[in-house]
Image (cartoon, rainbow, N blue to C red):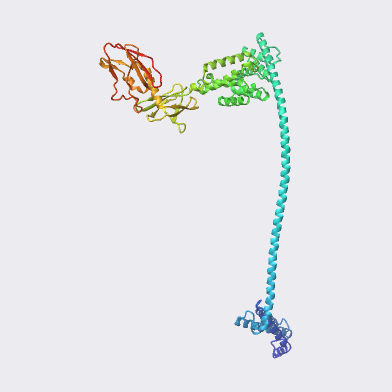
Length: 604
C-alpha cells in the first residue's frame, strides 16, 4: 500500500490525481451545487449536498490515514467529495447571505426563475389533484353515508312491512279468537242453561232426599233406642242423638262422623256435632274436625258450621263472606243474628239490635211455602229456631225504624243564650256537634261522673249557643259503647219556634202558677206575672170571673226576642177584683194556634 506520508511521494500523487480527476470532479461538483440552488424553493438541497459530501470526505481521509484503502485509489473520491462539499457549501452560504428563498441563480438568471415557476405549476397541479382526491374521498364518504342511510331506511321499511304483516296476522288471530270466544260464550250460555236445569233438578232431589231422611229420623225417634247396624244417614243421625243423650260421647262422635260421610246438606246435625266437639276438644278441636270435613265434602252446611268455630272478629268476617257468596242460604241468617244477640254480646248497641233484627227478619222470610224445611233433618230444631226468632223480633220492636231512634235536641232559652240538651237513643261514650251542614265537629266533653252502663266518664249531653244564633242545621254524632261512630244526624234548629215551644211547655207544665189571688198580702189583686214572663208563646189570653164565659182578655205585651224573660217596666201584671169574686177561669191561645184547656182558679 502506498504511504501517503513518505517523503515527496505524496505531492506527486496528489498532482497526479488532480490531473486525472480534477476536471470532471470539479464539473460534477459545480453541477450539483447548481441543481441544489435551483431546487432550493422545494428544500435546502445545497446544504444537504454539502453535509453529505463533507461527511464522505472525512470518512475517506480517515480511511487513507489508517491505511484502510490505497491512497492512489481513494484520492479521486476524496478530491470529488471535497470539491462537492466546497461548491455546495459555498452556494448555501451565498443563499443565506443574500436571503434568497428561490436560490442565487434564480435571482441572477430569469430563465431559471421561469423554470422554477413551471415546477411550481406542476406542484400546484399536484395540489389540485390532491384536493380533488380529497374532495373525491369526501364525496365517496358522503355517498357511503347516503348508502348507509338508504340501507337503514330500507331495513326500517322492511321491518315496518314485517310488523304490518305480523300485525295483520295478529289481527287475523284476534278476529279468530273473538269468533272463538263468541262461540265459547254461546256454548257456555247453553251449558249454563243445562247446568241450571241440572242444578234445579239436583236441588229438588236433595230436598226430596232430606225430606226422606227427615221422615226416617222422625220415625226412628218415635221408636227410640239405637239401631244395631245403621246404614242410612237418618239411622246414623238417630244413633248419634241416642248416644249423646245417654252420655256415650264416643259412639255419638262416630255416628256423627258417619252421617257427615254422606255429605247431606242439612244444618242441624252439624251444629249439634259441633257442640259435642267443643265440649270434648274445645273450639280449636272442633275447628280442626270441621275443617277436614269441609275439605272433603261439598255441603254448604258443613262449611257454614266450620266458620262458626273461629274466634269472634274472624268468625263474623267469614260469616259475612259466606252470606255474600250464598245469599239464599237461609240458615246463615239465623246464625248471623246470633253474632249480634244479647246472649252473645251481653249488652247491645242500637247497631247490634238492628243487625240482629235484619238477619232474623231475613231468616223468617224463608218460612213461606216451607222454604226452611229442606235445611233440617230434625224438624223440632227448625221449630226451635223459628220460635227464638219470633221472640227476639218481638223484643226488638220497631228498632229498624230509623226515625224512632234518632237523637233529638231540646233547646232552652235564657237571658244569656241557648242551652241545648241532646237526647240519644242509647248510651254513648262521646258526643259531638256542629252548626251547619259542613265543618268540623266539636266534642261536648265529659261530666264529672261515670256512666254506669259503660264504666267510663259520662259524655256531656249538652252544649251552649249564643242568643244571636240564627236558624240553621245542627249535626249530632256519637260513639256507642263499642266505639262505633253513629251519625251524623241533622236536626233543624229555628230559634223563634224553639223559644215559643219552650215557653209553651213551661206554661203547660206549671199552669197552676198562671193566676195568684191576693198574693203577698195584697188583698183584692189578681196577679198573672208568670204569663208575662213566658209571653213569647202566648197569642192571647181570655178569662172570666165567677164563671166560664171567657168574655174578658188580658193585656199581654209583645215578645222581646233579645230579652224574652224580662217583664217590661210599663207592663201591669195584675188587676183589682171585688171581694165578691170567688173564682177565675182562664184559657190561653198559643202562637202555634193551639189552645190550653180552660183552667179554673179558686180564691181562698
